[in-house]
Amino acid sequence: MMSGERESFWKKLAKIDRRILYWILLILIIVPLLRPIGLPIAYSQSVLDAYDTIKNLKPGSRVLLSIETTVAAAPEVTPAMVAITKYLATLPVKIVVISLWPEGPGIFHAAAAPILAEKKKYGTEWVFIGFVAGHEVALSELGVDIHKLVTVDYYGTPIKDLPLMSEYRSAKDVDLVVEVNSMDGTGLWVRQWQSKYSTNIVTAEAGTSFPLYYGYYRAKLVKGMLGGLRGGAEFEKLTNNVGKAVASMDALSLAHLLTIGLVFINNIGYFMIRKEEANKKRRGT
Image (cartoon, rainbow, N blue to C red; front, side, top):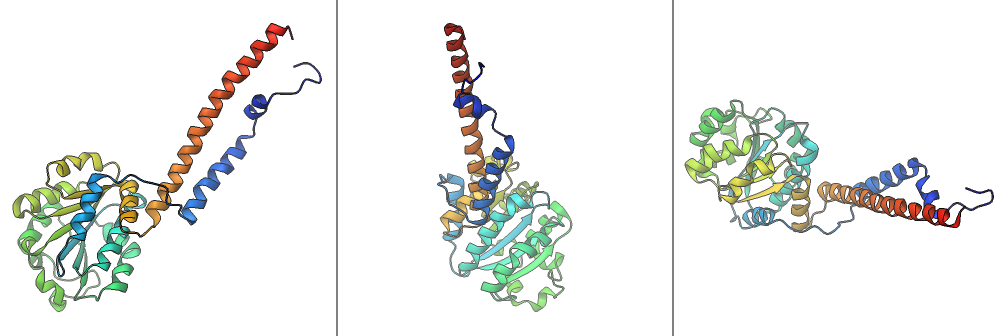
């Protein structure tokens, strides 16, 4: 560049301090997490079916909410779990919560149990059984006789002292299973309850397990499915209860838009700088 020649806009842009871009990205992530924007999201048919299945439960229906997830997957599936729990809490249905994974009860107790405790009376409208050991063998036994396998709830109260549990004797007493899954839980429920007792099932899957079990939904073995944060955000919007799923999707969307925009601008800048250099050569400068 000759002395006194002004640097072009595109060259200045190419030299921008990358820390500025990091700050912009950080702001675009933090702001929607604190104050969700609610960017438009197209509803998936599997989420619409899950919502309709839950919405159409008759008063007094008995729901079994099963938490099959780990701490590692909790950030992805907990928003969906909370959204479903909030919606169930507004319906005139009864709820029993269990988990076939040892980490599930702690996740539910921290994030969703207070929601039910505020809206429903414990022992008559909802019960928290907690962890049931035995994996698929245990699930098979639960389908035959819940009381034979479970004797106390999560808090140590004998289930015979909980009036609601007199209505939950076996799989035939359950109108809907709602499963939050990041492991292989969906396959267990389909094999042990749906195939044997034609139990209605709705699942909220982690993003990695959603494609694995989507075939169950297509085969009508599962009534509806939520997939990852996106599914949780769709359910939040359907129930008019914006929460962490929508906030997380807003943050992801803005971060992706920034990345796409920077790639687009970078490519334009590349060709504009090449054009400027070619013009200089033609002018002999």
